[in-house]
Length: 294
Ligand code: R5P
Image 1 (tube, rainbow, N blue to C red):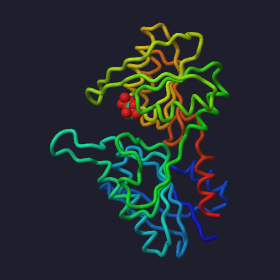
Image 2 (image 1 turned 90 degrees about the horizontal axis):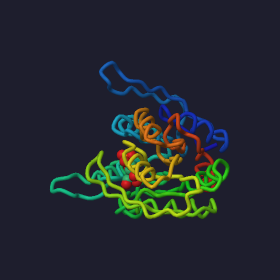
Image 3 (image 1 turned 180 degrees about the vertical axis):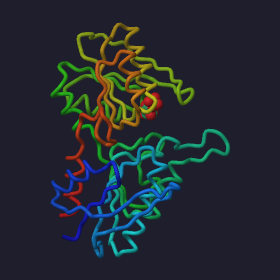
Image 4 (image 1 turned 60 degrees about the horizontal axis):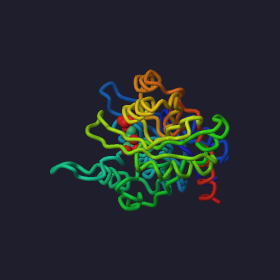
C-alpha cells in the first residue's frame, strides 16, 4: 500500500476510524515536549514514496502548528510523496479583513504558511464569510466538506418537529440545507458583533411555537452568540432550544453557561474532540478520501 495515515495527538479516534474504513495502515512516530517546551519528533515508519494522510484538527492552533510543520517537513525529508492534511477544523478564518489600520489579516497569512509545507487540505465547513472559497487564499488544492448531512440525520433521528434557527446571516448557507434535508422550516436572525464577547441579535417573528427550536451555528467559541440568541427566544416565550455547533471550540464553562441560560441540550460534531460530540463526521471524510485514492 502506498499510503499511510499519521495523526497528531488528540486526533487518534478519527485517525483509527479512517484507517479501519480505508484499510490503510497508521504510521509510527514519537512526539513529545522537551522540558523547555520545544518539540521532539522521530518518525518510525518507512514513508518513502508514500502519500501521507495527516490528521490534525487545528483548534487552539498556536500550540499545534509547529509540531504539524515539523511532522510534514520530516515526512517529506524521509521521501514521502505527498502530504494530504485532514484538518476537520481549519482555524484563522475569522480575521478575514483589515478593520483597523495595521491589523494582520491572519486568514491570509495562515493560508500562506500552511501552503508552504502541505500539499493539499481537506476540511469541514471552514468559516467562509467575506472570503468565499479557500482557493482565494490557499495556494494548494483544498477540499471543503459539509457537515449538513450528518447534522440533518441527527436532527431527524432525535427531534420531532424541529424549527431550525440560524444566529446570523452567514448561517443561511448551512441552515437552509439542514432545514431542507430535515423537512423543517427555518428562520435566520440578524447578529451584530460589537466586541469579542458582546453581540446583539434580532430574531424574526416565530409564529409556530409548537416546534422544537434547534439553533445551528458553525462555531461555538465563547458561547456569547448562542446565549444572546437563547435569551431573545426566551423573551418571545420560545423555550428549551437545542444548540448544535459544527465545531466545538468552547470550553466547559461556555458549555455550562449555555445550559444555565436555557439550552435544553448542546451537541456538536466531532471535528474537534469534545464531550459534546454527538454527530459523527467520519463518513464524509472517508467518502472523500476513498474517492480521491481510487
Ligand atoms: C461567527 O460569525 C461564527 O459563525 C460564530 O457565530 C461565532 O464564531 C461564535 O462565536 P461565539 O461563541 O464566541 O459567540
